[in-house]
Structures are given as C-alpha cells and as structure tokens.
Length: 143
Figure (cartoon, rainbow, N blue to C red):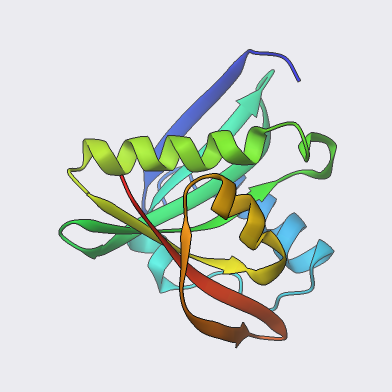
C-alpha cells in the first residue's frame, strides 16, 4: 500500500456516494447484512479514504452526547485488508472526534473484530448482543 492516501470527511449525506458504495459492497454483499443504511447517516460524519482517487475504506461517527462520539461502519475493501488501513481509518475518526472536543469514543464491534479494537486501546463494556445474525460487543476508549 502506497503512502499517498487521501482522507475526505463529509457531514450527512453530502458527497455520500463513495461511502455508500463501499458499505454496500462490504457489509451487504460480502457479509450479508440487510439493514446497512439508516437515519443516522444524515447526522453523521463520514470519512472515505482514497488511493489514486479510488475509494478503498470508509467509516462514520456521530454524537452520543456532547463529549462522546459513536464510531461505526468501519470498512476496508478486500485488497487492502491486513495492511493497517483499518487502524488508520479508526485513528482518523478519533482525531476528528478530538477536534470536535470529544473525550470518549464508543463503537459496536463485530465480536470477531474485538481483538483488532483492543489493540487500538478499546475496552469491552457490557455483554455480547446480536445485530441481525452477527454477535457484537460495545467497546469504549478515552481519547
């Protein structure tokens, strides 16, 4: 993976097309989720990562309250998985949350990704629950 990555942040559904395409490909077509898009997209910050003007990763975040941001929909296309790009997406969202004066970030991780988030400093809170057919765990990190 080259170093020439471009991170584009947008709020709401302004310029949402590439984030939507990535999420459709990864969460719906690859993983089989049905309820990928929701009303939160309209009030969330979305990041799309580009390499050579090609969308390769995305994520979103929205306020839970004035100091807590909820991260989610972190997705990386197959060709870039295992390269550290997912961590970079999470870090970019955390940095944006700091810019917005947040002190805590939370997320709902697929249980199979729990160790990935733990390596980034997230701690599980609560019990495992199911979103559609997939086990998830809520995780939190102070930033």
